[in-house]
Length: 349
Image (tube, rainbow, N blue to C red; front, side, top):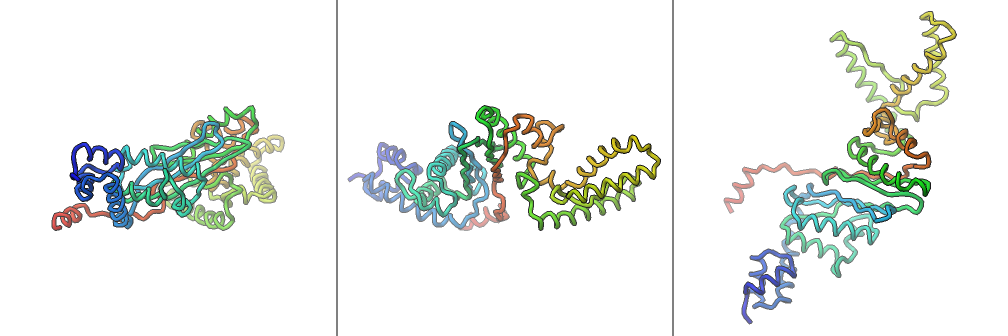
């Protein structure tokens, strides 16, 4: 049988997705037999993929797929080695196909994903085939699916680098409003990086540790402000609403009242002054919440409100119950590349 011909090369490329030269070589090796050539490419691809699997894949894309009725959403992080490949049409199609597959199968980890079949092929083989075609190591690193029977799921991806998926319960009459709101809150979370939904979700160990760190930072800043002759920052006693017990708030009010009396303020206006002072005291003593708790943050779409206030203003029945945020490459140790040395090494081969 004849080897590679233009017609056979074209047919093999369409069936395998491999490059022209790889198809030509495979057809010559297999004397023009398409099925044998496909097998040859697959085996060669697995070999190439095995070699590339040691390469760090820290680029890529975060992807979100939400179903038509906004009751299920899936977010994945699919990594490549370079940002260039992440913009490739083949990689974009791969990212979408994997995300849809994750949603359809409900898998929640790479290990579970690798045991599934996609397009009639074991997932690991499917991914290895794409590694061979694209020419870089690829990793389906993280995935999550959120679903609800009583509310709404929606999300947002910023430039493929940061993704946020949210779920909220709401009254049936508020569903459309909730869909729109969740998209906006997801945009907020992509930018402001909250780690939990509510301050109540912050661990006591984390609060205690951050309490000490925040106070130390402000004390150090005040030393510099003294040197510059500028007003000093208030040093908080606390950093989260979790710490603001009734006893703590009443003790703060009592101190403030004594100060106002000592200043000679009339008794009849002290209560009104106290309302403003205690509100400022609470704000000063909940700095950790504003950094880490979504609902306590100043809403980027309307800085006159917190996120919690913006949600209640939209509809009182809306309650965010799940929140997941992926940032591309987060936690991956990237290898520092010396480009000149790499080129020199390649030239020496």
